Length: 369
Image 1 (cartoon, rainbow, N blue to C red):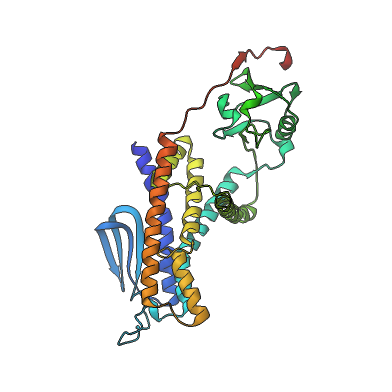
Image 2 (image 1 turned 180 degrees about the vertical axis):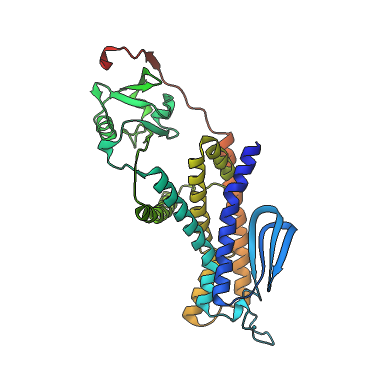
């Protein structure tokens, strides 16, 4: 339990600090005075004022904020114009840069973590003919889960076809007709499972539901950096495409709320430190992407306002901004409630898979000679 609590703090704290530092740095670069730079919310545990900025650590270590001088939007009927160092006095592009730079720093953090992992661990092999037919993970609801395949199992035969790499496994599954007899090795034993035709999904009749166990090849550091930034692009595109498909099919998107995030962190830290560090990068991408959504109250919503100011040379009315911020707040609350409901349903009420017929043979069978 203590390890999980520590892991949640260790995963989320740097993401928050880096995000707020992005806002802070943009303020300093554009001449906006910063009144407060706080990590956390609630009662102030420690603070130190340097120049015009009060640096703070607060009681609740989830979240944080940067408070620039002056309001985000200067009232049109104000008696005096904003002071030169205040946020509202800056050009639209300076304000735009300030609000998006937190998310950009989340992407930068994620890219550097991905790059470090790729440099240390190597680049994943992508040629299916060079990948052993070893199971990396199991997809829920597919035949592989129902016959209780495990991570690390090596698939040896599909019906009467021997397989030695991932390409041969894929080809054998595509050629399958009728029931499937799957032979695989686990802990020095050869095991056999029978999957009936009805266990396969009608829309995906050749999908077993296993992900490949990756193998890696070394890369030089500059290629690792490039691949780190590509990972940010890939996971952002993957997430947006998945959301788009959900809406196109009129299906509720699968979102992870606070409960789901804590659960994923708990699993990752118990699985291994490399998985945990990879998860920090993934969460940093998610935070950066989510904050750029054009929803009022998020950074992306404010960015949209300042783009509008740049195009029209004027801000929306104060009434319009107030209504937009309130709508954004209600939408954000609904998203958190829905995501939390999905977390509870997925984690605590997931149906248990049925186990198909399975037989075990010793490793001295004739097929292995």
